[in-house]
Image 1 (spheres, helix red, strand yellow):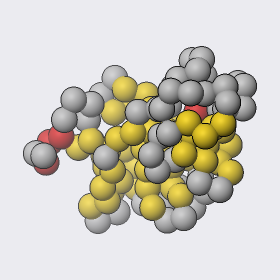
Image 2 (tube, one colour; image 1 turned 120 degrees about the vertical axis):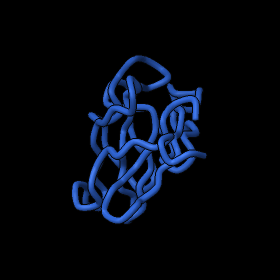
Image 3 (cartoon, helix red, strand yellow; image 1 turned 180 degrees about the vertical axis):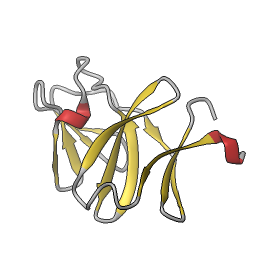
Length: 107
């Protein structure tokens, strides 16, 4: 994977453990999550209905959609709570120095 396949979206100090935020990677809406000090990135759009997951809540290692309460496993994007049944897209994340970088779509 080439260096330019990644986009810097935040600093490591931007999100404390248990926090999340909306970012964009290219034109892709992404929810960036700090889960126990490790960073994860998933599509910000719920696969059940088009709600913003970054407006939801983190409970343990799951993110709950604010619209109907369905939940996804943060590390894998797999659905864990009805009504969601389709996984949410995940993105590779790396930390370089204090920069949190997410791989661009299609890379």
